[in-house]
Length: 180
Image (cartoon, rainbow, N blue to C red):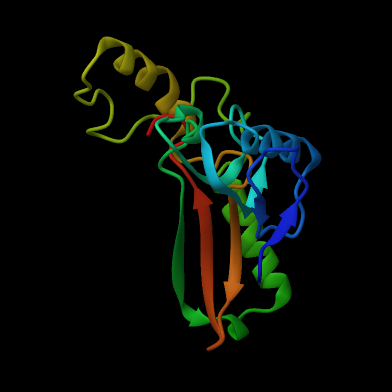
């Protein structure tokens, strides 16, 4: 897919979008970013673009003589993991696949509001990791039980896929959920 140019204010660097659709609120954020004097060359807009605090998720840009902490967000450990099943996708009916995905979604909570209460018990060794400051320890104790084992919101997802060879895969996009 070739990038397309998005509308920018006068004097702004180009917005090059690899996304098919850009949410209106995220586009406003992108236009504001493209107009900043420290942003150089262009702003790249990736397919997962969406509104975030500070800088839209799915944004790539270069700066001159500046660091933009908000561009990193609070989910720096974000990533995709793919796991191949030991059986082909064709060995399961559509109903079986839907049931499998439903069961996975029940045991792997999705969304920002999960675990508002006490949360899950932490595995051995993670109850009190050696952190460099008391503030980090407090954040860990508050966030880890509610965030570990969850997908989060935004562009995080869990899906089943079939590759060209007919193998069945579980694809998970999640992140550090604020504790990474």
